[in-house]
Length: 83
Image 1 (cartoon, rainbow, N blue to C red):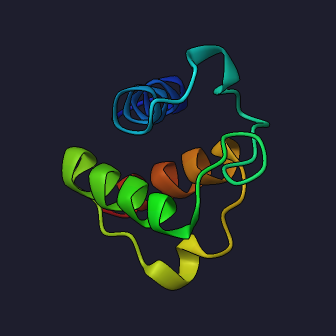
Image 2 (tube, rainbow, N blue to C red):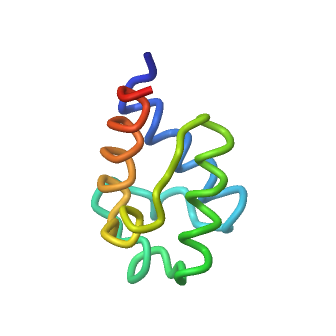
């Protein structure tokens, strides 16, 4: 099973590589929209990428409630535990 640290590192990798976010800006407390300046389409792209790379299913309704990196990490950990 993948650890929460591994999940965080994967999310960070995707944000840095795909969305050109500065690595130092990616913290558990970082808000996807205000701190990392993602828009709603970027958030969808992030979830699609995580969905493919981590082989989980992400419900777009659930995704709408996610605001921070920690929210995403918690969701991914839960989704992976359910599979």
